[in-house]
Image (tube, rainbow over all chains, first blue to last red; front, side, top):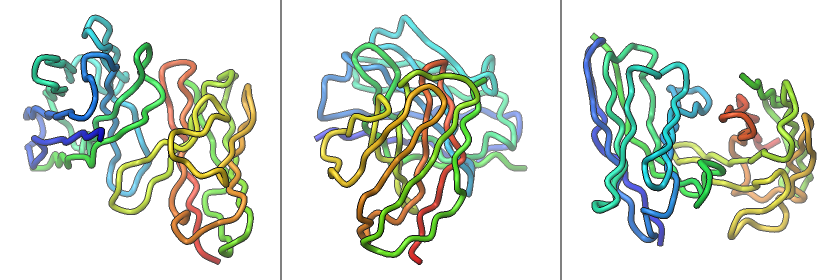
Length: 120
Length: 106
């Protein structure tokens, strides 16, 4: 069955960096768009970024543009999110989620999330 | 940015009753609208996409309707496992989520 497992979250100081990973299994990873979505504690969902199946198309939310970089390694069935210049408002659970063959949406499978806490 | 507004914020319903959740877009999103269910401590689950198509494995008691700017998620007869937070998401112009509707036991 489809599984998405995030890792790499933790406590980081403002201005610091963190790299999240998402290991995919149970489907042909290289066929699908993938996204990162985040959820601040007690708040709603916010789309962060998505990447096309080949990695040639990438988009970011304005709130993270220039600070976060999404990438994927189809040979390793893995999705990544490099987060730099972290701010307190980046504190959230970060989910990776699967899109479709031709679009980032909708998101039909989600991982369980990894918590990123930005605090001094 | 397209703003998605969900109402009500909280809906109190008795098991077996019908629940109707609304989602309004600040501009037309055509039928590019999805609904997700999220239970405490869990990831969201896709219920509906294309405004009215049920995702794989979703029970028939969940139905979606609407197009343009007004959308509705209906749960025909609430089961105990349906008490959760529901989010709408537009994906016509990038992606934005509504703030959620919590369906609680009355």
